[in-house]
Length: 252
Ligand code: PGA
Image (tube, rainbow, N blue to C red; front, side, top):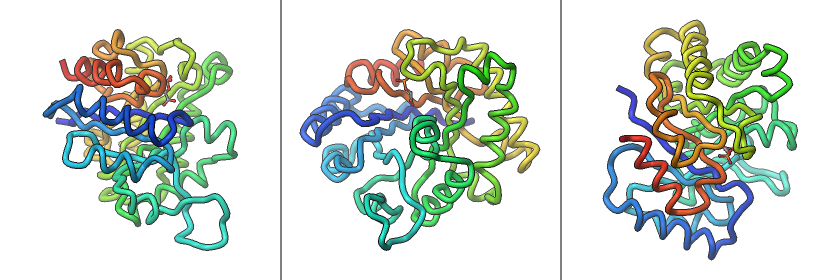
């Protein structure tokens, strides 16, 4: 049985003070909640302070990216060890906004995953097609390319530590959610790809989140699908009450 995992991607929102307030609000909303794994991913500069707020609670911390080198003259970059030192346990890798605006490719995603694992961080690896690819009937090809390219060379043991997030780019921040049937279809396909790359055990054990305009109103229906194991939430994770409602609805 796969335990559900709901993660909030705060993107480039919230100052340190605002992030501390939001994390505190979420902690209060959730109390002693134990129904699934909960992760929040603020910006790098907020990690240390937010870590103090959520310490000892059900809310775990993640970063939104990392650089693959251990250290060196890489101005503006943050290493896996640095992320880990903040108290973060997870890291989002290969988000479509990074693929779209910052030149992220399967190759760089793969390097970041390896760096994360080396530093004891759990990667949340994002895959998904854009609107032109969906309309051109290329969804499965693109998703397969992202999954196989990003996870190439990983062992079965390493796959235990990976969470995948299927995020159709056309559904991110647009209010346009994939229908639960559209999402389920791709999630099931991703398991088939994993079975081919690794084996049935990895395919059945890997948690696959859905992301793209997840809200309290659609969380239960999406999370009720056989192959959807949680959500990666952007906009609706920026308010404690709506994110808490998604989390509670997801495990209903
Ligand atoms: P959204 O973002 O929930 O605002 O659509 C999801 C994401 O980008 O992870």
